[in-house]
Image 1 (cartoon, one colour):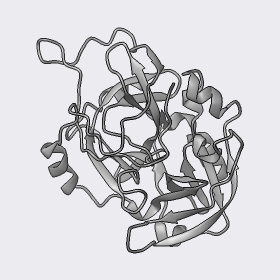
Image 2 (tube, rainbow, N blue to C red):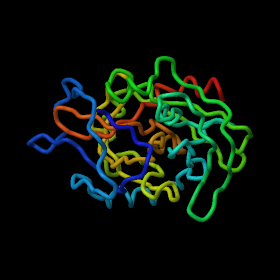
Image 3 (cartoon, rainbow, N blue to C red):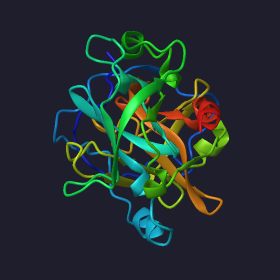
Image 4 (cartoon, rainbow, N blue to C red):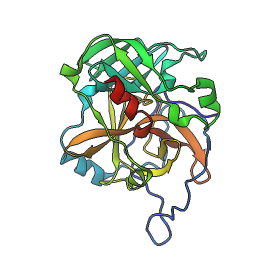
Length: 275
């Protein structure tokens, strides 16, 4: 059964590329087939495939600061997810974060922007959720048929963007995702899964393993429970922009437990309309 990721697990910085014997990228004749994934690793488990990327960390130091003030905790019933301010009163997160354990829609309680174990920059109540038609938590867990629908936009009861700022969204095509091979040529993943929602985790140098036509892409950057809805960021046109959000795990013919993100193409239009 595919496992969604809305409770805590482990941290790691990763850069990963599938290499051919000659050292280049593997032939990309067709996307890897994906299948419903297994359960996520146990709390505290570290996958030995994940390695820190000193190159990516050094590259990150040369760029403007990440928009951490706009990223925060989506406080849900019985757990938490990660979300990002993408409009004055608009938070982007994963659709499965808006359902309870019985598969019924249940609005998150609040959004805690710029949250840390010591303080929160701004807090607002969630008053509405916009979900893509056709999303079903039961079907999402058991199949790969609606993976690209795992996104939601949350409306807040007040505008906190003057404190947090707003993160823009960049729509990539498959080729652009596949060029994110890791290291200094990768993306940055941000989420709250590692510290039970008390501390943000930054994973630099993430590389895309595969990009699919259903508005999803896969990587092995170490997504854990609580990171769901967390942004995948690239520095583009002079600012950090969202290219996807963390969603789940799937298996492929080549890799088991591949982290899957929903591509920005899935939600960019609706975010622009509601903003």
